[in-house]
Amino acid sequence: MNQVTHQILKSARQRFSDYGPSKTTMAEIAADCGMSVGNLYRHFKNKDAMMVACMEQQLQEKLDAGQAAAAEESQALDALRAFLQTRLGMAYTQFSDTRHLFDFIQYIQSKHIRVLLTYEEKVIASMANILKQGLEQGSFTCSNCQQTAYDIHQATLRYNSPIALQNNSLEILTVDLNRLIDLLYTGLSSHT
Image (cartoon, rainbow, N blue to C red; front, side, top):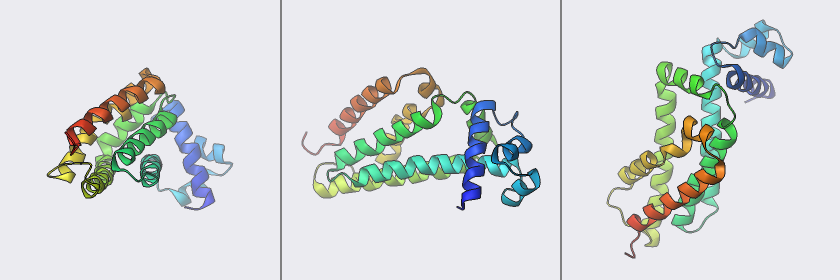
């Protein structure tokens, strides 16, 4: 991604977050970037394409951060905890003060569900890899890592929910998620 595209997406994300997708215009985003609307259209076909790119970028940043944190851990439980906690921290940073996040996500969900489903598949695949690592280390037991990763993803959706992020402190969410991870570990542990 070039610097101009990066600046456009940064400005668009801020506008979509502050004013919502329906009240954000291409002219406002162009003005924020110090360019003409015509120049903006050279980079994005329309506002819809820009919204998709913004959401994909935010989700990918969160996934990349989680994967990087997990990769720094040698033990699978620590990797799982790092992956989940880092994604929570990123989501909280990205979304907790976003007045119109729900509108933005609702738009993407209704018009471009594939963006969210593709992201979900990547998250589940990342967790399945961590579970496989745990099997190899002898610290986890699970008969189907992909299904177990899906189940963990479903169990942890609260920690990426716009409503939970806006109505709870990061400290509360972190403590709650740690308790859930401990419970999951008890169920996955090969030492029970």
